[in-house]
Image (cartoon, rainbow, N blue to C red; front, top):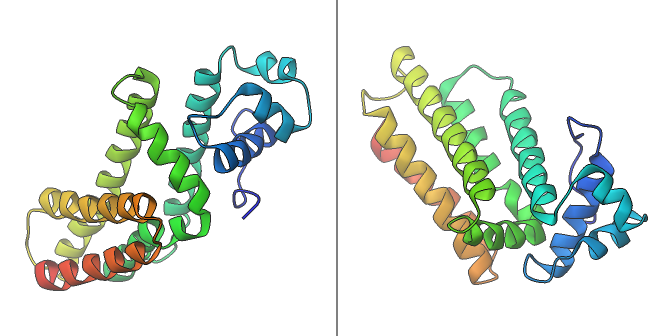
Length: 196
């Protein structure tokens, strides 16, 4: 995949975000430079520095961009049926990463920097909080509608997110996208055993 799926940056810098994606995909976090991003962007490094003072500022904006796209994807789920909505949410977490394997590698590299980089840690924490909220909300809705058993929604959301995180990490570390399929199946089995 040469581009991220459709989406635009809130500040109009979608082309820079696409260039950042391609550079991260091709070079990884450790070998990423503003020059490599500029090469993908087709402009000078000065054009990038016009918008972002440092590479870390750019990468923090890139994480914001990805989070906004993920939030939009969740909001675009049109069904209100809790079971179908939970299934689609789990697909967003575990099926979509298979379409952007290079990005998954780069994000894991960036995630490994979070203990040392406050901006990265804040973005990943924000993403985690949003995903847990989305999972918890759909589980609570399912409980209210009688579609799911009366469980601790916070705990169930945490378990599902742990399954998703583990599957995505294993897929990258072992370079085996079938780990995503296995994690998706495991998440479905957890839903069947716990929520039904």
